[in-house]
Length: 298
Length: 243
Image 1 (cartoon, each protein chain N blue to C red):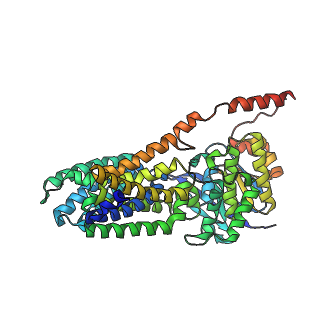
Image 2: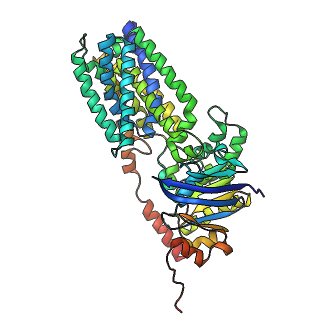
Image 3: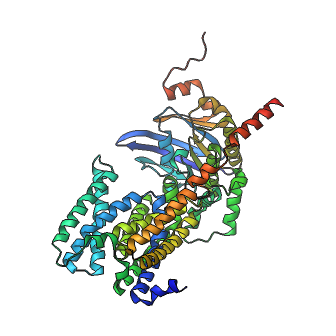
């Protein structure tokens, strides 16, 4: 037990643990919706588009969490809304238009960072630092997580119907496009809330890997979202411990733990894992053919 | 038997200002199984989508008992084509059927004993009780179609609009599915089915709508399903026999 508790004698580790619990749970819960809506790559694109917003926030307000939050939110919204506008007004499809806008945004962000009054390391934006969480960061993460979970609790039924069968959802008077935008907005807010802790690229790991892993293990939507949340928490805490004891950067350690879980589920998942599938007996076809022939000759 | 009406008045739907169906007038009465027939591009799917509110209506209206159909959400159940769904979705047959109650329950309504009873009845009518706890990808094509129907039934709608449900089903599955539709018709529901296999029409439906952008014919099998109307709808000469 000693090795389990020792790290948390330090205040920075206590804050890191709290941050991991919050971010792991919220992102893990949300990941079920993102994976089922097949928004994993859109999340990737949006994560990059936050950079110019963060850079602008730094230019205007310095390294204030609220400034970074507002800047990142505005940048992501510009890319999503701009991408949708381009796809609606031209023959370009929205994957291409959003793809085009996010690389432009990323380039603009890198150039803006050059003019930042304080030195901002790009790797901090990409990989974060959960061990350096301030009280203000934690408060912001707590507030954003609460908002995300509350909204998901309110719209869960409609969202489930939209994810499963948009046409029928529409026929029941549910505003499918509105829910689609809502999910994207929640995704952006979740990313921003984990910006400081695990960084933008690695927050994607928490938004995709938990549900992707559970999807390989379960056939239940409830298990997918709650299991995703549990796995998010477990992975984040285990990654934090790993980073402490093995002296590894915290963000990558968290994602590596979750990544390991994903690979194990892919290989050994009882129903959908690759190896159990290979090992399953293959005589079923012959057996049923034999039954059919026997029956035929009666 | 219920005698609810689905009234279509002067209905026109256009895509990019080109009408797909125009100025349709129909009075559909509950207690009938109606075949919606016509060649590709005749507007069968468009009509179904217009009735369910999935495409904007250019002129005319769809009314249920004097009320605009849009204000009667849940009364019309739509069964899309099977291919439009991700069958790997992590949900069981029962979970899918329970979704049929969402329209009534809203965001907060508790899933009551009555909802549970309705779900069980939907599973029973669709003959899916034994498959209720299966993941939906483990169903055959006919069973998937029945799961769609069970969800619609759980919605407790009066009007059921089905887009090509018989496509890809073998004869046994077609017969099973049709028997369930027939049960629902006996209960006083209206079942409207878009269909393209003319040979099976007399076995499946008691009324037909023949469509070709405009309404060619609507009525009972005896009155409307004849060579002259089919010929007009499909605009091809059908050779019946050599004289």
